[in-house]
Image (cartoon, rainbow, N blue to C red; front, side):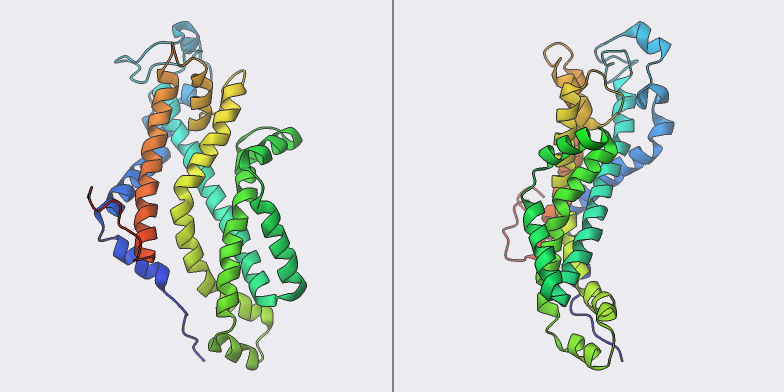
Length: 299
């Protein structure tokens, strides 16, 4: 027996978005930054300095303002800022991707289980959702830094711990609605196991709207990662990881004299976030047609 999927809303939404100029501009920005991130080890003028090494040439040049040789200037130990910003695109995009996929995987699975199985599973998952929704990312990151040490994995884990609950709640709400539909009842009547029904028939119908919401949230995740890394960079004695947020935080201490140390990673962060905002705004409006189209006057 073939069971009709409840909704292909996510696919239809993306198809409509492809006709929007703001969506195309956002995708172009994201695609360009992704290509830069992939090719950054090859296109950076000083790849060793880009990943954080302090070379002898860097020690000799020291901090320098933007010039033809160093378009983005150099940092406090002489490392080329253009190389660090380009390499930093990999770190920022990788962290954002890991947080989104990690939060989605945990949130959707737990939300489906809570929405379908009810009882103690529903109660425990909902309690966990309410608890983790209260956790601020900065506090979680600080606690994990003390427990397991600072680093990219700490930032990613802290954001996953604070984001999965949002997707779990959405998946739970969707699951509660879909579990009452006829094709779920028919599957159960035919003798299929509850775990099979949950993951074979319920999960594919719950996942699309949650995935669409994660695409809308990507800019927020990127900026939250940058915020946590900004705080880490602002108190670090040295800076080896070429993350945009860390570079902004570290350079902010010298903003009055060495402005370029914060300006250029901040510029890349803003442009990238703007690209994700354009994409997310288009998806949000097309998935909810009653929303006011804020960008139409611009594009």
